[in-house]
Length: 229
Ligand code: CDP
Image (tube, rainbow, N blue to C red; front, side, top):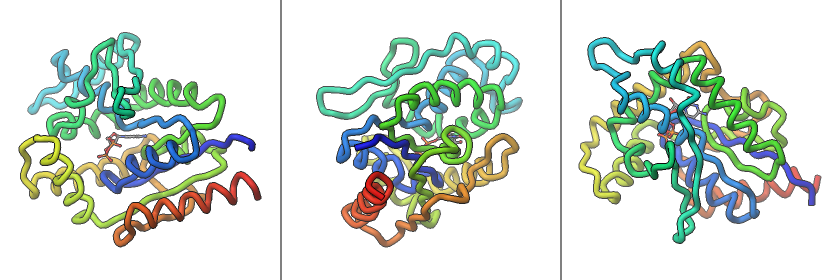
C-alpha cells in the first residue's frame, strides 16, 4: 500500500495529539508532535534567561542560539514518545503551565518557525508520517494527501487539559487553564507567519461530542479512502 503524509491541525487541547498518536499506532506510521518542538525551544529560551515577564522574549538571543537547540524524540518502554532537548528528557517539563504560557510568543518568531519547519520536513521526507500542530497542512506539508482540522469549544478543551494536568500530578486551576487556551488561540490564529488556519482541502472534525472510538472510526475511514481510492 502506498504511504501517505497525514497532517492534523487544530486549536490547543482539541485532542489532536491523542488522535494523531492513536492513528499512527493503528496504521503503523511514525508520529511527530510538532508542538513539543516549539515547547522544547521555549524551555531552552526560559532556561537561558531569554524570557522576562516585563520585557517578553529576547528574540535576538534566541535566534542566535537556534543552532544550539537540538530536539529529538525517543520511544519509552511504555510505548510513549518523549521529547529530548540537547540529550535531556524534558517531556514532563515542557507540558507544564510555565512553558505553556511562553510557547505562543516564542512560536510567533519567524526564524524559530523556519528552523523547526525544516526539521519537521526532514522527518516527513519518506512519508508514512502523522504530524500534528497548527500549520502542518498549510506550511509544513502543503501537499499532504490527508489533512484533518480538529475543533472543539474552548471550555471543553480547557476541561480536557485540566483533567490531564491533574492526572499527571501538576497542580492547576481551571480558570487559568481556560485563560491560557483562549490566549494561545488568539496568538496562534492572528500571528503573521503561518497562522493557525484550516487548509482549504482539510477535512473538519468537530469533536465536542465524539468519543475517542468514534473519532478514530472517522479517521480510519478517511485514511482508507486516501490510500485505496
Ligand atoms: O497541546 P496543545 O494543543 O496545547 O499545544 P501544542 O500542540 O503542544 O503546541 C503548543 C504551542 O506551540 C501552540 O499553542 C502554538 O503556539 C505552537 N505551535 C505552533 O505554532 N505550530 C505548530 N505546528 C505546533 C505548535
